[in-house]
Image (cartoon, one colour):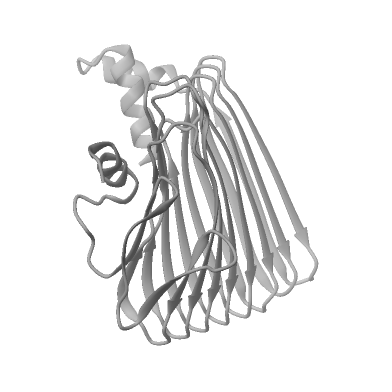
Length: 305
């Protein structure tokens, strides 16, 4: 891998070297490196571009890294990745995509990730998006995540995009069985003329299932963001969605929430707050010696932490 690709890997997956455990590194449309373990197998799909990740029942305290990097201007790809997590597992999965575009043609990575999580399992899934390069070509990314959680399983999804992606349309869907819980934390920042749409649709099908969807975002310059959250309470369950956003300059933000109680014992809550940075916060930091720009940056960084 060249230095640009290594820098992208560091940004999206925190990798300074080859990780331990199972991994599959994809670079410019092809496999760059792969490793499997006794409990985690990775197999290339035969009918389409992508991989199957199979985690044996009882696997605990292991990790899987599946980052994607694009450094070739004009490259466009669609990838399908399926995760099969057995019963009684406790694993961390680190994904993410980095695009460096130094040319004039648009570069795009679209991916569909499907998770089938067994009973009593725990999964942490981290997905980071990052863009770089001074070319005129757009950096585009459209991921879809589909999650099916078995009885009493738990999944935490952390999704981060804070720099360099010109256009993104992200969709996350979840179906939860009895006692399952899904926690989603989104952090997003747009600037320039960037566009970001994120949508979440969660079906709480099982008795005692629950979800908590929290989005924190900052929109600067002339960028535009759309946030959609839909929770369907189809049984005795608990659901909560929250969107907190800071709007700056000439940006635009829309937050659209929908909750559907299809059971008398469904407890659903939605919240949204969009506003500018308070002037008192800026002034307070400026009295400590910061410039107005430095004060704004510190507030934004703290908000997205």
